[in-house]
Image (cartoon, rainbow, N blue to C red; front, side, top):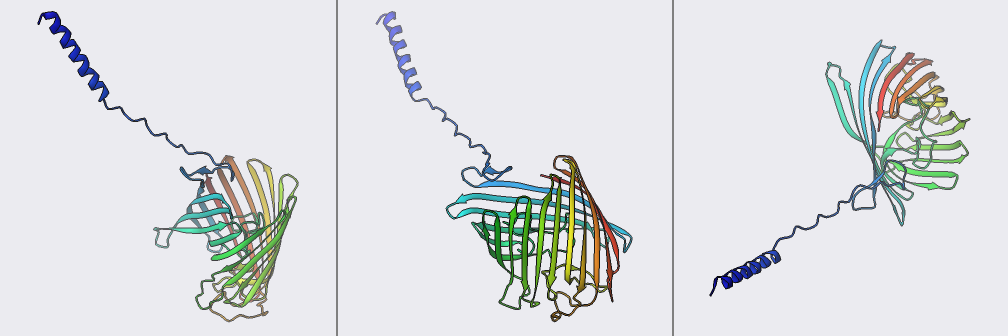
Length: 361
């Protein structure tokens, strides 16, 4: 074999080996496509799809710092609160499927100069079509389909309008310009198979909402009703008027600590009104007031119902609120309120207020 044949044979062998190595080489797999979070615009701003599902999720809440004062004991107090709201929505063949969970925590000084902190689920409920079940405001206070027909005045606590939360199950009926609902509420007294019942009915015409609400308190064997109006006035004003009647001590009424002895009491009659004016996109203010007559002298629990008996204790309250929003999602709020009582064993008059800084998201 000459040298030329040897070289040609070696080259052929190297080509063959090289070809075999190329055929056996490991090729890296293409990366899987990443499913980025998509905006869900079916339910308004802030929702996004949970990856791999058709469920839309929204996260919101706030962080706030309050300083309050009370003229009765010439003192001030501070409270910090954080709130996280989680909503999940999707359309189904039975209507909207919705879940709402509100986590909330408060931190405030204790009597021994330390700080107490509490964190809890403030609300958690589900909706499917008109069905509502879970822990939230009862329908005497508000309803999920009632728009502006809930709560009290434009201030932080809304004065005395019967606020309450409970485990409940109910149903919402919604028309083109009307709404109604009814719910059975666990009153948490544990001594009866009968729940409380609350309901609401109303209509919306233009910028006005008119409603009526009622609640039956089975443990007290009494009921309360209220009528209300919430209406826009011009492009920048809003007026709230509500009237209350209760046939005895009940959680469904205009309730306040009206006596010198501790305990929240119910007024037989009450009326509140509040007007809010928006002066600019960054500044608004409101004034409000409430008159309550003939508080029932029995406490909400632990005493027999008094029927139509009353104590002769009356009260009135006035309040003023200013809200400044220097930048988007940041609120500076100031409130002042004076409450006066008259009648035997009435509570002491008081001037209270708060200053608040709040960041919403």
